[in-house]
Length: 341
Image (tube, rainbow, N blue to C red):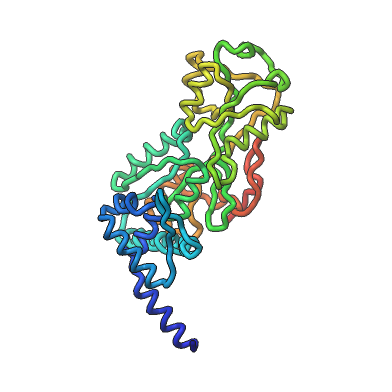
């Protein structure tokens, strides 16, 4: 085939691929089946299947393998997915850019956030943003840190608040704060009233932490706990996965184990006496709270205003950006590499 013929065929394929087919592909890939994808798209299952069939015909390759409990991406589907996600995210950027031309900060801004951050001062900043920008539809989605980054990367969220730097080259990470973490125990724990606790005294204790999701990097909280325990000579401690901050606190109160929790999330329990801080003779661990957005994303007026509000500044400062691709921040301190631009 000549180069001219190849280019002509390629252009014909691109023109034949429609946005509706791409959206159907993404929905099936994310929901793992045609029935769930059809429900998300508010379409019938035959209509969704028809869009996928047409797309596969235009591309000349099957995108999904049908299995008993849903579908799996084929090699072609896995190769196609990141490009489709980037294209759809770019379309959303275009919509935002048009909105910015129309004038004031308005429209929809989706913020993906780690659920435990809802207990911090950031919620007050969100409240102030909504009061200052009533024309902006601020939508929140909760997820674990790696999932927050995925939502932002796919364009399903404009911004993300997570723990620790994401080294992905396509994302920009901005440090907002370093959250102190406190080792806590039940009120009746034998060490709860101690003035000082040596790490060796915690040998044999069970710890509760957020679980890591299969196929992702270590969940930042779990990784920080493991590193802190290892530094105190407790690397072999039992760690029980609990996927809810509230559940962790209630289980610690009931004596099922200890936990390393953000200081802002246990104020009420410490005041009431339901939990006690273990005064461990070791450096206090912290975990960075980081704002992420796509490096190529269009940041309109509403998004820029939200970034400034979350950062607690009149306007976002490029000096708060962390160099993507650098190593993660050390568990006991701030970012390993802070840089301008």
